[in-house]
Image (cartoon, rainbow, N blue to C red; front, side):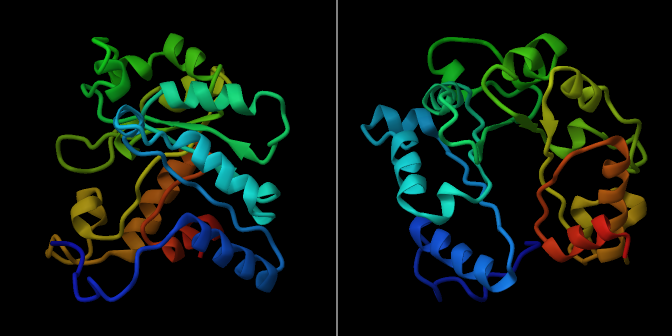
Length: 234
């Protein structure tokens, strides 16, 4: 495994309300807003068993003074719930909330589409016409990093795809996931040492910068300090 388990079972389950309270304290301490990016996972499943999350999530965000003002992005790999949320947020009263559409692997179908017999997959979602359709209900896309710069046959970063350019043409920002510092998640030429589970901070920083050059607007990183170094050029 690339990650340790030595702290398993030591901490209670986090709640959204608890996380928001922590953000409010840290925001006051640091004198700046700290954003929140919750993901609605398996929305169709929970709706089917009578536990829809969309309205509950919005109610929690509205109930806390901090998340009525701080930047919030609600993301999902499904599209139906983002359309629903866009309808709920359409009056502009929650101007601090944005909606990124997450995109899975190319041949994978959207779960809510597949559940109703549809065939739309994420490769089709990344086509220019589909990106324009996404822009009617979302503000950004969140693809896998390899959908932007795939690996070449030798394991190095290859040639960037047209995804960033096409997303911008549709009016969408691009927020890829996930940059990780372990060698096994990095292009082969950015490894440090030969252990696949070894950490290459410099390699991770260099990899993120390659994506910044392509033009991404934001990114997800397992090691925030490495992401900050990539942004600051340190």
